[in-house]
Image (cartoon, rainbow, N blue to C red; front, side, top):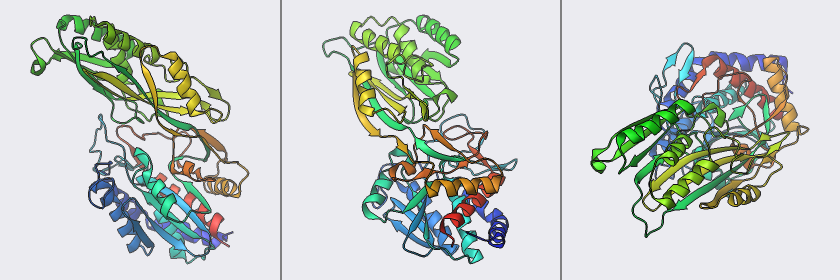
Amino acid sequence: MPTKQQIELVESIIERDRDMLVSTLVDLIRIPSKRAPAQDGMPFGKACSDALALALSRASELGFATENRENYLGWAEIGQGEELLAILAHLDVVPEGEGWTVDPFGGEILDGCVYGRGTQDDKGPAVSALFAMHAIQQAGIPLNKRVRLILGCDEESGSSDIEYYLKHCEVPSMCFSPDADYPLVNCEKGILRLVLSGKFPKNDRLPKILKASGGERANIVAPTAYAIVAGLMKEEVEGVCKSVASRLGVTVTCAPCEEHGQNAVRIDVRGKAAHAASPDEGNSANTALFETLSLLPLGEEAVSLCLAELSRLLPHGDTRGKAAGIARMEEVSGELTCNPGLFSLDEKGFSVTLDIRYPIDAKGEEVLSDLQRSTEHLTASLKTDSPPHYVSPDTPLVKNLLAAYSDVTGNEGYCIAIGGGTYARDFKDGVSFGCMFPGGEDRMHKADERVKIDELVLNARIMARAILYLACD
């Protein structure tokens, strides 16, 4: 265990490097590292590769050994020994969405906070971990393990970067991911992606809904959605829109859409984005659009039946899958959540991608079977299934991490469960550790994402203490 003098020295170095920590985060925020189509040597697009290059360059300047593994991911490493302690963070981000009051990729500093997409999820925690390691190295404290900060580039879009790591790189003996909440997450729900689809008969006349779309990612509550309908009076559509808007607390507007014909009308729905793991914090534009479309006099029986069933299975405000017959509850991990994050429709039919977070005592195939039994005119199919993850609170890793949190903050350390998914779930004994404090403002996947500079520094202190407890003689 570290001495009191060693701890004080490390924390003084972290405080000394406060401005450098912040400037590193600002530089990373200014790279819009959303996943994009692959290019030569850049599997997730240029911006993700640029963010990784910047992070590794900064780590090298700080004196770390670094490695870039084909732009899937990279790492910065200190220490020595046979065992490997890994910190799992990511540099990719979700799309910025709407509703920002500042440039989402500007890295602006206002009222003691850094603003921008990724400040909380997960560039801010990654930079705090980097400077925690730097302070330990600067203090000259010997470690009995190698400590590796792994920086991934595809966490938000399927974690194929970690699949690459597990196939080609050294698996750590212990690891944690600063991509969730304090005190410590030892339980992550299963993450299930299902597709609910309906086909329109070929012999039917074209449906009066010409086109519709909603959402940005399956793991985000849809902030916007739209549909283009033809053959209805604008006043008729407008009446339904006003009724839905007043009842559901969303904005629903309609306007002529002459590019699709004289009698075409465009319906726009504006809700509120949130992380799919906490859908109650948002307001789905998709489910509001489902209800709007189901109330329109479309005249096409097959289309009307499909949309009516879609609205019945996924009613607005039902974030627990009750109407779809998939609701579940478990004491440790809590309730199942269901988010219809993506919606698309054309003359052939439609599909909805459901992001479902299910309890640790459930199975993905059982949830799919229940949904299939609830449908009559639609088809439910499996896209992906990541089983739940659980680590015993009695492991040395958990005990030392909770001790580090308590000793730095003076607050009680305890284990919690979340609906979110982190890199930790891909490692047998991996847990999530920070960086959202109890009672803090969660802006992940939302507009005006931001982090307090004081919390960035506090996170670095906590992670430094955790490294010392786990890897110092």
